Length: 316
Ligand code: CP
Image (tube, rainbow, N blue to C red; front, side, top):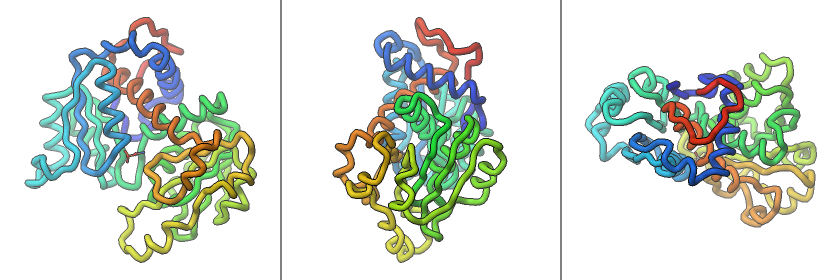
């Protein structure tokens, strides 16, 4: 099986295959309940998580497999100074697949090189979060029937928001997307992500700082949390954290079929009143995250889903 450190590790047709696989899983939950019988997933989480860890684990349990791991490194031998590489060489003896979250960019790559089983990046610092992107793509697919020919606004912390970097990188592979990058000057999109857009012939971007002035153009508004844990200076965080708050007044300026996405957790950046708006898609993203992790875990292990016909003969 393939390790997934970024979605560049799998082909565009394999991503389409995973979207198709997740739809099948959703419609055939009982049929797939023993797909991963006898398999074990390790979740190695060196950084806090609610959705990602619990959905990786639920995904394996719903496929019939089992789960080990740690949430917070303080109870593992990491607290004694053990390296990521040694941890992965150890855990590879126990399990069939590993999901790892770590505060440092590049940690998942180091882990994948040391491991002898597939490693899935569950978030590495401010870099990438590929399984969140799979959840985001599934949500766009279900809302619009496509993941291209869209104007996608990304709003908030575009410097440290790894979900934003992963999503832009991946949407650039699917065709025509106009990105509207909405952030304060201090939290603009890193150059390596802009270079990715520039390298396409089909995608474009504008950088703006005004949400109310740009929301009317958007098919998708991807809100993000200001990533407190990545700031060096608490005063900067406190000054920037409430720059954008999406509320019912701003939603009135948006298209009637715009979709609001957010990887969650949110703090203040989406008012709770927006949750009841049919355009709010962020709890759908949570469900899609679990389904996409079921698709990915079974695919990288190489377990076939009973009754499933692949979209094309290109398995992950
Ligand atoms: N979206 C996401 O990664 O959430 P958690 O940090 O709770 O896992």
